Length: 293
Ligand SMILES: Nc1ncnc2c1ncn2[C@@H]1O[C@H](COP(=O)(O)OP(=O)(O)OP(=O)(O)O)[C@@H](O)[C@H]1O
Ligand SMILES: N[C@@H](CCO)C(=O)O
Image (cartoon, rainbow, N blue to C red; front, side, top):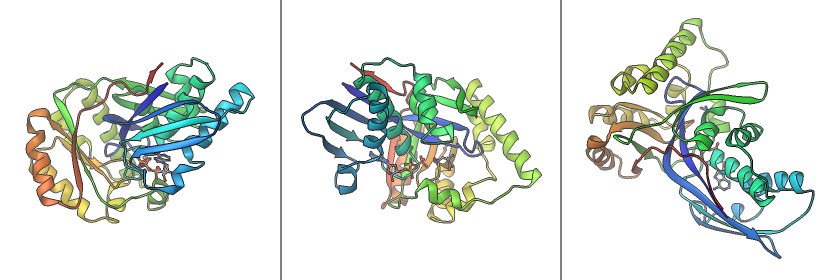
């Protein structure tokens, strides 16, 4: 059984806790029943001893497997991780979604993507990463009565993502403490109108307006101050021709959307200016959670 979930970039500027999209960088897990419990990690986290035991995946998997089957069973898990941890690329969402999907598969229960998404909400209360992680593509999402309501837009292959991944992790929990306790009416209206315009731009494929639409007054500046080089990353990305350039989730990664034909030039400029950071050109992902039986 193989289950994979893509990385995600949330907020997309003003859409705090509501907008997100999936990129083609995946965490894959393979598992089967075994006499003894074991975890093997390849890729991101392979040298982290904390992940070899009862990590986030294992605890969520066990919780759901026990609930669904009412029995104890050991599994051998092998993880192939491409998503860097605590870098704003939705590593926790990928783990949460894959653990819930894996537990249902292990219990022999077929379940809809929507059900998996609603289960994921228990572990991550904002829907902006978990929704594209499950559904793929660009998503606008909200939560009502413990359920996610979302709309998806398939992303075309002539646009790409260029992500700049700093060497410094930022945990989401910590990054949320950096935010103001309240916002002025003026700033609330600013973010509301820019989010609305962004959603319309994605659905109408009007990429050229995203530079303006993706401006934010809620969270980016406060968080970018923790790693001031990010202001420069954004500046260079725009100077090089990015269509939009925003802090990815709670950071530290910076996400830019670019035309496919400009991608290599923009990525190489960013690599040259930020040699200590990892720069990746990525396709968008429109599949989300994939289960291979
Ligand atoms: N591959 C993994 N295996 C086990 N646990 C993981 C894995 N990836 C992430 N985690 C857990 O998720 C935590 C990181 O979550 P956090 O929300 O801080 O970052 P993120 O999801 O990468 O960023 P963002 O939500 O801004 O996109 C890690 O500290 C770890 O507990
Ligand atoms: N909307 C979330 C995304 C990170 O999980 C935040 O900005 O805190």
